[in-house]
Amino acid sequence: MKFLFDLDGTITSQETLPVIARLGNLSDKIDQLTRETIQGNVPFIESFIQRVNILKDIPVSLISDSLSRIPLYREVCDFIDNHRENCVVVTGNLSCWCEGLFAKIGCKNFSSEALVENDAVVKLKSILRKETIVELYQAQGEKVVFVGDGNNDLEAMRLADISIAAGLTHNPANSLFSITDYMVFNETALCRVLNQLC
Amino acid sequence: MSCSKSVVLSCAGIGSRLGLGLTKALLKINGRSLISLQLEQFSEVEDLRIVVGFQAKSIIEEVLSIRKDVTFIFNHLYFETKTGASFYLGAKDARDEIIEWDGDLLVHPDDVKTILNTEGEFICYSDITSDGAVFCKTDENGNVLAFSRENGDYEWTGPACIKKEHLTYSSNNVYNIFERVLPMKGMKIRAYDIDTYNDYKRVSEIIKNW
Image 1 (cartoon, chains in turn yellow, orange):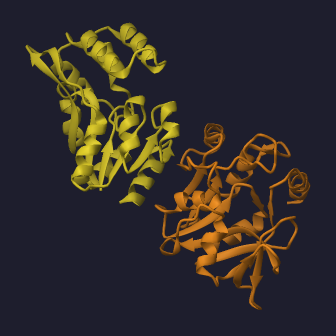
Image 2: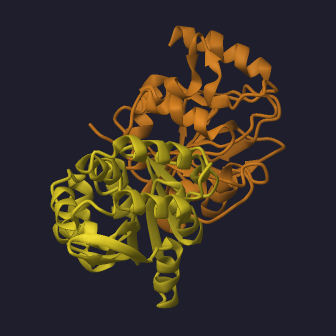
């Protein structure tokens, strides 16, 4: 059994995007893009490309350092610590921005990739579609549990053997109500379910 | 004392027989929603699992206004399936012993305490009060021998407790799961289903004296 976790708002108790935006004084632009994306006016992939374009000049090392200090859900991290071999972080975020955070969480991870030169993002190399990681583990014969909260988790959760919508930081996206197996709203409930599935 | 068993509260149905266009969990009884009355009785239940379907979002909002540590389980096929499917979904990954509890059932508070503290498997029944009831046939010690649509000694109301190793799937009624593992210890309780508008009026009066 593999436990795949979304990162933002599922393992971190704060969304990472506003933190990055503040570093570059770009909160207004990012907030507007986030609003448009949540309202469905901008498709997720397009939104992600625009987001990276807005934030690309902020030093990568500054972002990674800031994100490594973002608060995490303690009980969720304890579960990951106790099942390190079977837990995987799956995030659309850029790996170069999350290096410090990944090191702190300590399990395997998959993310989007960018070319970095002189401590700045030059261009996007790949955008992670989370469902491909579900497929990857299922092809290895693993039963996959996916824990997520956003629209960009929808296809991965639909494909997973067991899906858990986690409303820890904000309510799960409306789209998840029609596909999820479980829904929880605090980390005690989430970790209880995860331990029951082990 | 906290209850070590999982409790699965089935609230996925559309309440068609009641005919108020509202899922029964949100029905106001003497000014309070049915599910809020049940949650008050489950305060010592750690692993409370609520199966939702019809009007899931509204039920979740109501529950979260009372407690946050509940696990919600979705029965997306709530229109095609009955309480057996909801209970199975709620119970399949739960603890070793699971109590099924229908979302339209109100149980006397003293009996709730007894149920939550009773060890092992059991089936609860009540005196016969409803039209169209499902009956329990019992032996001289009150053990449940069979369920029947025709006749019996008591009315099947639930709750009932089953070990996970005995859990099987049914898209039909929850008693269809329990009848596969009969005979089982029986417990007579004071419990009332709210299936029809008359049940609703009757239960509203009865619980004023609890």
